[in-house]
Structure formats: C-alpha cells, structure tokens
Length: 162
Image (tube, rainbow, N blue to C red):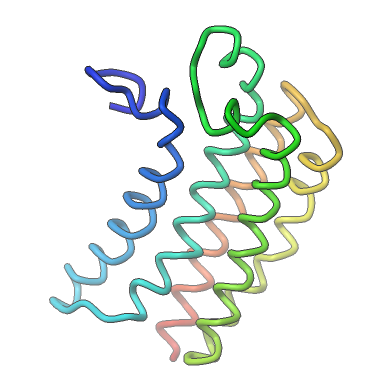
C-alpha cells in the first residue's frame, strides 16, 4: 500500500514512518521474538539503528525523485521538507545511527563493532550534502545500502558476542 490501495501512504509523507516500523521494529524485534520467544529492551534498541538506516535508504531515493514527485503531486517527506532540509535529514539519520550504536555499546560493549561500518557513511553523506542530483544519487543509494548491510551484520555479531 506504499503506492497503491485506497490511501497510499507513500504519497502522504508516511513512508519513512512505515519503513522504520516494519524494517526496524518489526524485522528486528520480530526476528528476536521468533528465536527467543521473548521481548527485551535490547531488541528494541537494536531496531533503532537498523530502522534508521532503512529510512535513510528511502530518504536518499526520495531526494533523487523530489522534483519529479513534486511535479506530479506525490507528497513524500522529501517534497514536504524540500531538497535542502531533506539533505540535512538524511545526514541526521546517519548521525543518530552512530549515536544509537554508541548508546547500545554502553550496555553491551561488543555492539560497538557496529561502528566499524561508520566510514561507509562518508561517501553517501558527501554526495548528498554536496548537492548531488539525479543519477549521482544512485551511488549514494548504493552506499547507503552497503552501510545498512554492514551495520546489521556488525551489530548482530557484536550483540552475539556480548
């Protein structure tokens, strides 16, 4: 129902909320529950950086399409925020990912392995903050996907070692 159905939420600036809920909370907490049959705060905490990386993927994709979406009346968050604020929002999401890993690391030091993925954020952030548009943002999208994968794997390994 992102782009279809009676009320497509992707056209109502709600895509980021649903991505965080389903690719962060539901995916991480649901997987944890399926394996442990319990819910604990650590699963919810680990869902934050994963969910925010997933949101960053959507944000950079919507940034790439912001002018076309605005022209056809698609109201994504990027359209509502505007190009400049969307670029800052993308960067802020990745800063919060690092902060969340640091906070998890206070309780579970091995979780800090997730920070090894942080250098992967540099190229997409440079592209986005540097004003990249159109096809140039495809590389930022690819880099954000690689960051998401690395954060997920390294955080999972770190938490397994804790």
